[in-house]
Amino acid sequence: MAVEGFSCTAFCYGQTGSGKTHTLTGPPGLRGASPYSADHGLVVRSFVYLFRLIHDRPECHFILKASFLEIYNEKVSRLIASMRNRAVGAHAMNSHSSRSHTLLCVRVRRDLRSDGDVSCSTHGKINFVDLAGSEMTKKTQSQGKTLEEANNINRSLMVLGYCIAQLSDGKKRGHIPYRDSKLTKLLADSLAGNGVTLMIACIAPSKSNISETINTLRYAARAKKIKSKPIVKMAENQHLRTALHVQTDYSTEPYKPNKLYQLPQSELVELVQLHMEENSALRTENTELFGVRDQLLRDQELLSRENERLLKKLEDVNSVCVRSPIIPARPTYSDAGANEQPNIWTNPAGSSSNSVASASSRGS
Image (cartoon, rainbow, N blue to C red):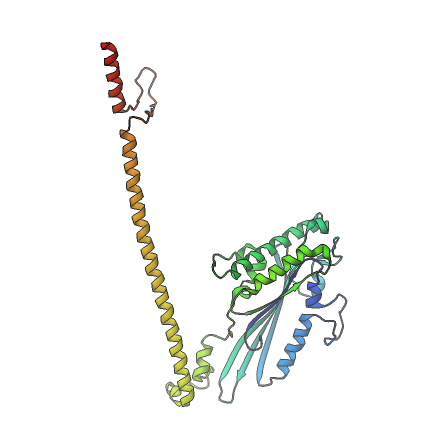
């Protein structure tokens, strides 16, 4: 699909020692082996298939660019040479444990020129993501540097899981915290973008790892619910140029305004229908946005009225509190000297009642 211009991603997830790196690259020690060996993992097999597709399409010109990144302790670096430079370590569950996430990105550009001198350029991409395994420190018995690496690995996987949970919930789509981790930031377009993503869940068969196995399967079940819209990525205005058969090389032949009238009737009708459908979709979206705007304005008006009602009620409560003889006086002392009379607020109703009581006592 990357040859056709789609963005594709394949990543392995699972606990430490479940075979994620083995699935992507094969067992250690395959250096110098034939690329057609059955021991190779998904990466080498995909490259063999990719070059076979390129060989079978002589009418197209392909340009391949690759980058190999490593995320170690939330720091991104390039693995220039090979997988031998990747950070590995040993603990109680895996003697050759990956201590970092790796991302191999291959960009595929295809230039197609037909007999009518019409060029089409697509830009596909393949991502191979080898995630470090989730670890339980009680089982791995990690200490020191290995423990620090495990904490960073679990933290990034937790953020990835939270992003997958948010994306898989179609009803509640709030803020997706891609920036909380370097891993999710690099995989943002692969998780919920315009590409195709394959998740390989790696599990261990032993009974002691049943809790991690269940967590991995739940992880995969949530990832399966994510909906994306794969599209072919072309150069700017490439869709319109291809539809109108406009030549991209303006230096040899200028654009002819009457080029559209030279199209066959079937292609012209198809082009008009395509633009009508797009126009109808835009009108529908515009109507929905206006409806949302009107609803927000109505909600704002209701909130303003409720706010005014509450302010009025608060003023009434304050006035009742001032007039009520039940509420005791609240003195407010000034910074005056001891000889001066302090500023004390008294309740008028309370003062009148006290004076009446004093007069009655004197009369008795």
